[in-house]
Figure 1 (cartoon, one colour):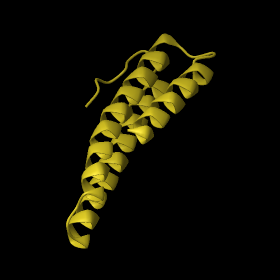
Figure 2 (cartoon, rainbow, N blue to C red):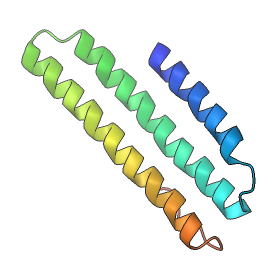
Figure 3 (tube, rainbow, N blue to C red):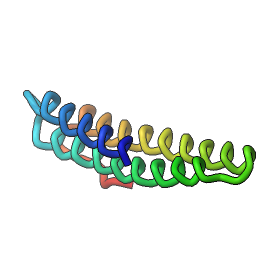
Figure 4 (cartoon, rainbow, N blue to C red):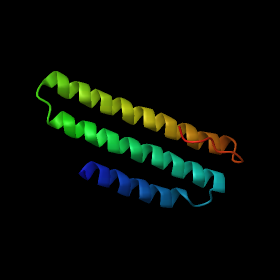
Length: 96
């Protein structure tokens, strides 16, 4: 839970700094990217908590690996949304 709170606070702080000088499309893309990452953070936190309660090392490792994969996937999707807005500020792709 603490990780989720820290991640959310960091994301909000970064959004405030990044908002300066952005187009509306870039701001919308940033918000979508943050939503993608926030949703993934919830899933990652759940998996990490389950890993902490795992009965075996193999189960713990599998849960942590799954959490890492979700986090990496979310980062790639969020980056794609932001890149699309920077490359073509007139359109923003829908969140995936």
